Length: 65
Image 1 (cartoon, helix red, strand yellow):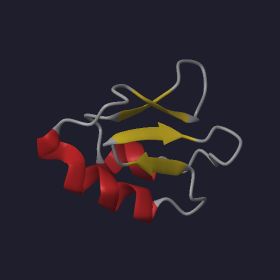
Image 2: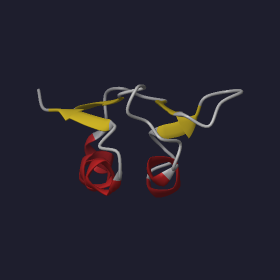
Image 3: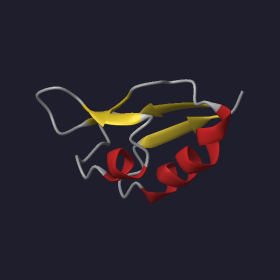
């Protein structure tokens, strides 16, 4: 599974950063989220998928391989 933050949809809410800090963080000098690790480790897949559903702007995209 891979994950990305769609930058033009990111509203800087930070739900992804709060929910799954092992994968998401805020960009330096910005409140927009970014991905630390695009390929999600198996033990974080469920948490990451849940995080995508919590994003109010639907800015977290999940891709299954």
